[in-house]
Amino acid sequence: AQSVTQLDSQVPVFEEAPVELRCNYSSSVSVYLFWYVQYPNQGLQLLLKYLSGSTLVKGINGFEAEFNKSQTSFHLRKPSVHISDTAEYFCAVSDQLQTSYDKVIFGPGTSLSVIP
Amino acid sequence: DAGVIQSPRHEVTEMGQEVTLRCKPISGHNSLFWYRQTMMRGLELLIYFNNNVPIDDSGMPEDRFSAKMPNASFSTLKIQPSEPRDSAVYFCASSLDRSSGNTIYFGEGSWLTVV
View (spheres, chains in turn red, purple):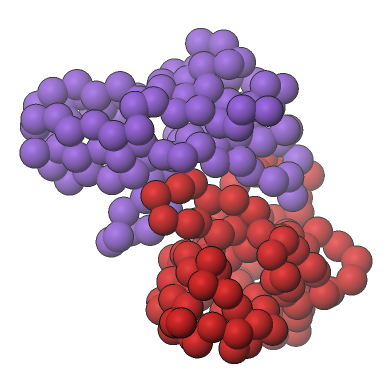
């Protein structure tokens, strides 16, 4: 069974500063990895996902993430954050077994607060 | 596309009352999920449907919870009787098919408060 750890529950950062949100996963099989964002009073929406190929994945709003298989990590980064990036960020994993359905396991979330 | 549509957006009910949450998935999507989000437990998958058939309901907390999907465009999650600990945000989500790696699209949630 898979699991996802997000080491930081809250990350405050000043506007225009870089940010990294950490995600580690555990799984006995190959996985797909996702980052979702949840703005206040809204549902989750996909930021980016890693399925295969290049380990550096670019998403919406200037975010990117790098898959590191040896460290079982999928950290999310942005070089310069904006006030509008204030939100909850969820890392998620699902396995690549063809017989498996979309059982996506979500991490506990990291609350990003951008300070003016 | 209108996205995943949930109703009601907010509901306040008294303990013991029946609560029904409704969901219309994105047209053409054949996988539907119900999630519950709380501060204490985070985001939990309650039940998953594929082609209107319940595939995994292992996340349904107890017999007070039931979910149905009578057709491809409608699903309900019912709590009877409701309890204060059921207070949470309930999300419905859908995706295109059962292949792993597909994006899951979430509705805006139904905010349930049981007093």
